[in-house]
Length: 370
Length: 247
Image (tube, rainbow over all chains, first blue to last red; front, side, top):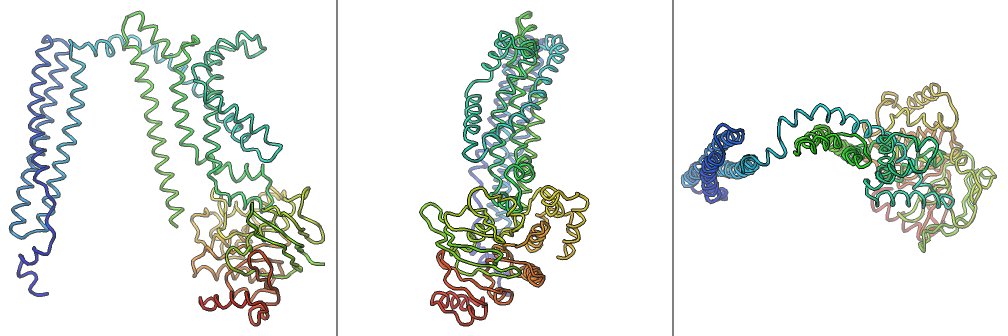
């Protein structure tokens, strides 16, 4: 025990060696250097390819300057990785194996960071520089600021209709989907026809594309001369069509939620004297609904996006409004506005769903790990 | 007249026979304990009495009324014969108090406020009044099982079926649950229980029933079944229990 610290070499011989870091560090350094040169070359060619003073030229200048700066940072990290690797070898030779391990591990992390960061920068820059090639043809086709600004007011106003259609359809889907799910699970022999009908509806509606349903409802209902229904506005045809389609998906989500409730919950409730229906109402559905909120929200996000399909029946939604501008200006920038609007309302919702799923997971973990 | 009477009870799942002709009588205020190896049919027997499992042949009578077969109001039967499960099966989306009050409010038409008051006083009896507003996953297994027993008692049943109610508990939590069963027995509650707690069975039972592969091999007072069993299989079973240090 006393001689251990006195002879570092014998101690070192028993310790397994530090991780290998040299090859990776060299690769990272070469990559970072190549990246820097590439960025510089790309920048100069982008500027030569467009006239000075134009928007593409300015964008190219900014992007390549940024690219070169970030590449310099990447190179600095690569150099740190290389120096770390060399220092680790030195420490290993001196018998300071534990120090060498830490240094080598840090070097490996730096090398990986170099590669990851470098690759990301490269892809972003290449994508952004696409906007400037061919005299900025991509930017001029999709991203003409003047046209976007000009159409934005009307498109945003029309987007309100998309939101209205989506919200109304979602409320109806929540109700109809639940009814379908319960119908699909009606027990007993007497329930068989009900189950069959529910299955036929759910399968059928999931098989037919939403755009077909919208088309059939939008142009079909007015022809039927039905009291009440045929006189509705196109928005309501859109709401009805999306409700019919998405309640089939919602029904399957509800059903999955009901079926994951453990049979012991049924036993407990039935043993107290609750009937099938009361067990469903007081014990099973309250638990099932909690579990299906995230997947239902995911379905609603899909529904919201499908509100853009209603333009085929002439509803003046955001997409239709944007197409109006687009055909007048022979340019797609107004449609890009619609895309941006969908991104703005959708991404927070997807993040929210992910957050809820993560929270639900940890809560189940706590209950299970008790 | 016996309070619960099983006559020639048969139950099978597909080709697997679980109960083959059980005859058993339970008197009012009696505690009847079912013992036997896992898979001997104890749990199935209890679930049949509660109509959670339909029987294939035979008859179940409750207080003279036939409560098996088609046309029986199983919900009414279950209100009279409560059941407590191995894995507690509390409703996880409700507080302890609501778990207990749900049945009285929704099935017996009790006034919600009065039902909650009653639930609270029942909880006091099992020393859990301070957990009334907790959710089941915030309680220990022993506490959950005590709540499950109270939930059954809140329906004022005439008899209670206890299906291995301590088998899912950590050893140090078993006593708190068994103490409640002891009190219930002292109060004269009619009970049928399946258990592996042999000491407890010996102490609390009026009648011990040994099941083996779906057949009722032996029954008698605990002194007789535990002390001087007639059947070789009963002796063998008890010998294994003793060897395992459980008796």
